[in-house]
Image (cartoon, rainbow, N blue to C red; front, side, top):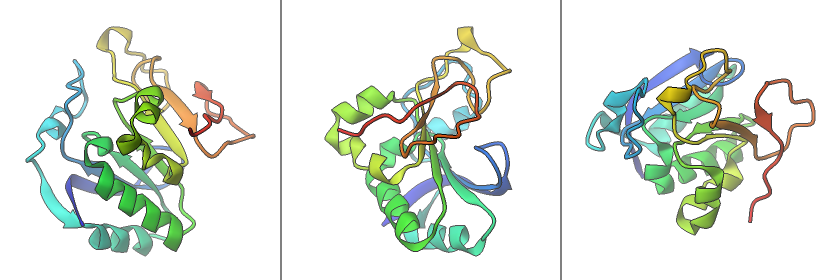
Length: 167
């Protein structure tokens, strides 16, 4: 199975806590005004890689957890679900995922919701330029939520929200 990506950024600390291997996917229809990555909107941009190739890069770095960003990974939900499933089956890494969809929109759509069981954290919602706040951790506007899907009793990241039960 292939995933269209723009880039893989290894050992980044900007895309979630600690070291992370960030997979930046191609394709986003949210087109948020002021998006920090508008080159990711093109669904034909970047290049294709296999899930196996991405998994090899992820597994090669024993120090880093994983981030899905973009673009929006939910526009390639089948492939990212397969990658996330394999990460969880073959490693002990956590997965953070950024999306312009809200958790409510994802949960209401069984097609989109298929990835949720494999994610640890979802950063949801579109970036709203008029609400831009550079003091926020890991998000650009306060409507975006950091949602622990697996629960996190020792939450220390301001602005996060508690476990959201999966339907």
